[in-house]
Image 1 (cartoon, rainbow, N blue to C red):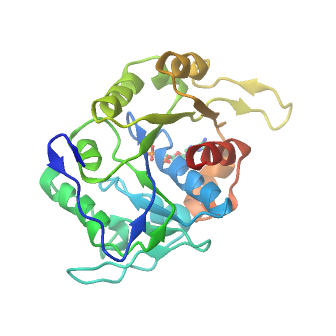
Image 2 (image 1 turned 180 degrees about the horizontal axis):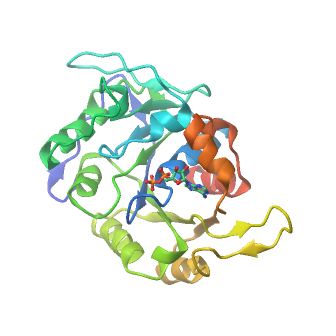
Length: 256
Ligand code: ADP
């Protein structure tokens, strides 16, 4: 199958990946990696064989969220993914770089190669659903992911502030241009529930996710509150212990 005129990268002969879901955002820092991780955990609890590809090469955060510190093993031809405690298979540039704190300063074509290798050279095995933590934005590297991987659908992660602007519209239109359906939208940091009185506060402005989803015909909506426990789980590498009904429901709707 071709998209944008470029043939998709071949899958490793040892692997079978049935579904690929990209997680995208308009800009960095809205919680794309956190949502990717939570969806993977939820899918795994539904009994699926799950993989996470960290295609956010210049801002990789998947290994940290899952507390993976061992490097990936491999050679020029094959790379073995690292499994999380719960058995989710992951690949990230941070599993290959000797020093995680070195900045990745590669140009577009090199980033493209890495994403291609993550698909073709990693021995993923038998996978029901792979979640791809996509590069933020609608630029060169995001385009490469769409062109390289057979993305079945995407989930857009956004904040209440972004929803009112053009950022979500751009992400939506890019998917449309690539013939990829938008399966769901997550409004992250949607509200804060006061731990003392229980009242909800719209810290980043009122929610518009329902209207926006309706205007694009996106069926699945999830709202996540600002939760210091989520930030802590990502920092401590314990995202597998953090569960929310909203993410469980969304994962169920995505892979059913
Ligand atoms: P992105 O992948 O979009 O750059 P991340 O998922 O890495 O964003 O999240 C950025 C930071 O914000 C992380 O430290 C993460 O733990 C934190 N974070 C994300 N979502 C929430 C939330 N709902 N509540 C509290 N902290 C959050």
